[in-house]
Length: 143
Image (tube, rainbow, N blue to C red):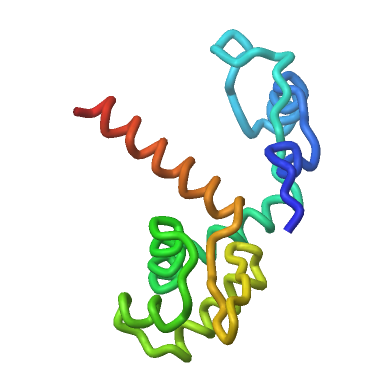
């Protein structure tokens, strides 16, 4: 996955003034430019990069995969046998999920003898760090 940031999400942009003019011409909107919209503001329109972001979040939305990712994020490199024991899941099920997460670029492994030690990738670390930062600041603001 070659995700470069917010710029990858943007396919194109339009000026607010252009959008308002088109809507007014069609009679679809009665908003006047006098409201708090800056007419020279560019509205960024999501593009194809959004599918990669969706792909990442799809894996985080699966409860079993989220548990595996969380376990690896919190504890570092672990073999399948430890992951399956701690989560109370069959090793074949854990292996299946790890293969899917590996293909998605969310986990990696290194071989130690007969074992593969799985860990999260830098992308996964960034996602967890960002989410935890958002939730901790949210709690600080509400508490």
